[in-house]
Image (cartoon, rainbow, N blue to C red; front, side, top):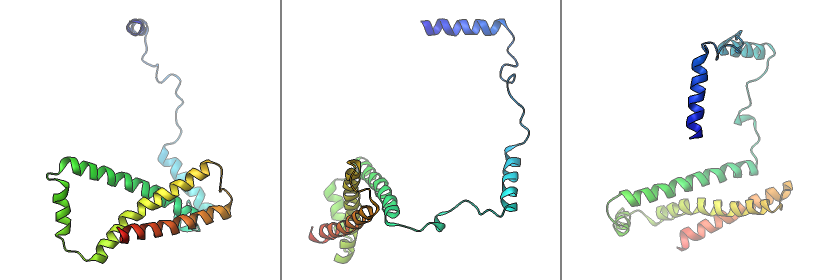
Length: 170
């Protein structure tokens, strides 16, 4: 009710006086457009021989940098894959054994199946182990640079070992 009264009161106040220039009364005129400002910016950078903004090609890649990117990528990939499989289970006709028989009927070699299993197991194991590493960081442990590199190499090694174990033992 209060909102309704406030709305009518404001409309009544606005109707009682002229309000044509309300939006423009306090606006300062712009001297240049955005395109002119951009051209001035690039002309100044060219005159001073400044390079373009840095790109990925100028950075020295490090283990923490690659692991951070991979951790985010595996998280997005796993989320997308789980969502896609869930949606497929809801939408596609047939049951799980039907699609399992379809995969078995492809008659692919054991090496290709092992590679596919490794390809599925590695993102899961890497994301899990690197998540444990991040939980240790949340506890305040392992922030020294040698420890960051050591735990990074440990996560990579354990991810490969666990992925191989899952791929070829199961």
